[in-house]
Length: 112
Image 1: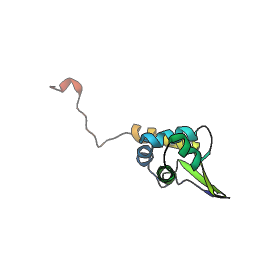
Image 2: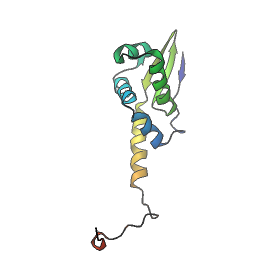
Image 3: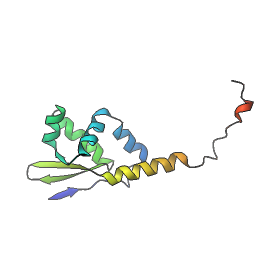
Image 4: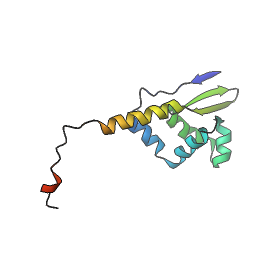
């Protein structure tokens, strides 16, 4: 059984958020948060073709949010929950870091 690992080091928080920003991929992540599934299970649940499901799962795998494992003829996907925790931390770290390059004026002095 070959496990195809996620690649969290190569994907930026923005790339991961973009991947999660698609309704279908967000739904897939929600399903995989419950348990691992094979592509055919996701096809049946979502009412989509195998190629469409596989395409979206590959995007999630490429940004490190899911991993896959070949078992016979089926490919099973699992959510990389640690990647979501890391994403949350990286997102907060990125958004909350000081930005000396942004000069904001005192709101009292604003005319608008």
